[in-house]
Length: 156
Image 1 (spheres, rainbow, N blue to C red):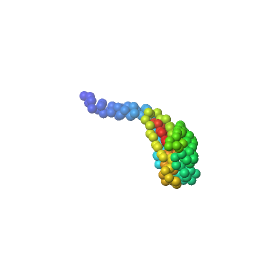
Image 2 (image 1 turned 30 degrees about the vertical axis):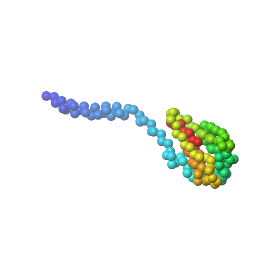
Image 3 (image 1 turned 60 degrees about the horizontal axis):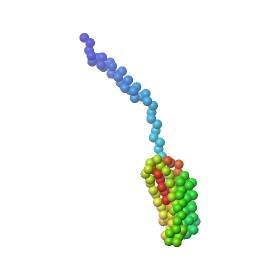
Image 4 (image 1 turned 45 degrees about the vertical axis):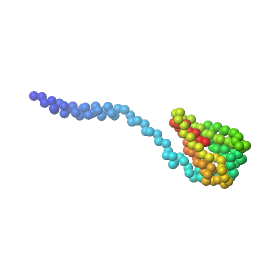
């Protein structure tokens, strides 16, 4: 008499070989590209140097002063250097000529991320206040250079 268990046991290695072949015919998927971590991209020392430079070159950055205008020019130039579309909005308020600088990098989604820093100073000198804020914003622009964001990034 023929024993069916013997035939089933004999076909098990063949079935296992077919299953293994099914999963091994496709190539390996490509690796997921990794960006550098934010702490590697953002250079704190560079931001500190830029803050000191801003405070040294434009010590009086009160609204409407030449120092405020020079700081606005610096921000616009750096945003442009790092690939942002720059919009300079000049207006008058309280008898003072004021300037807003907005850098935009368009993303593929409709959502926006806005990072806003004070550029003008309330008092003179103001190294740890608006100069540090502006320097951090400029370093963030440098860290985002060359990256295609999903959401639109607005720096002001």
